[in-house]
Image (cartoon, rainbow, N blue to C red; front, side, top):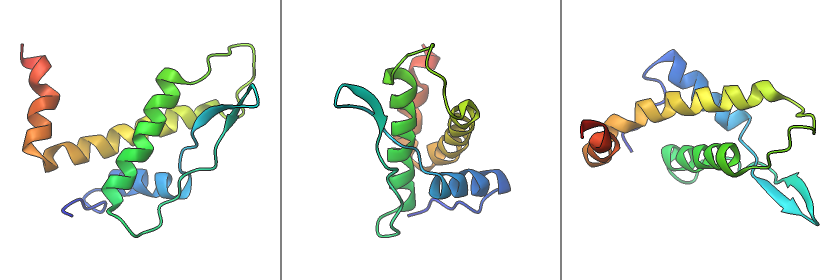
Length: 110
């Protein structure tokens, strides 16, 4: 409830990018690599909850998605943009929960 996408222009731009160009989920359909339609924000739930689910999708696509270097990617710059915008949103969200922030940095302190 305390997440405010207007705290900085960079955060506002990142949130707008996700809302306007939500990430799609990579999947295998009929034995072929395919994409689902993006999960659009419907305004009914908390924006941050939706953003974190969308960021999880970006992360999963990055680490678990198809790795086919011989197949051309339609827009490789979109991956970079999604990752960058994800980092901006996560950086803004992290201070909102002291417990999450503590767990996030716990391994780094050891």
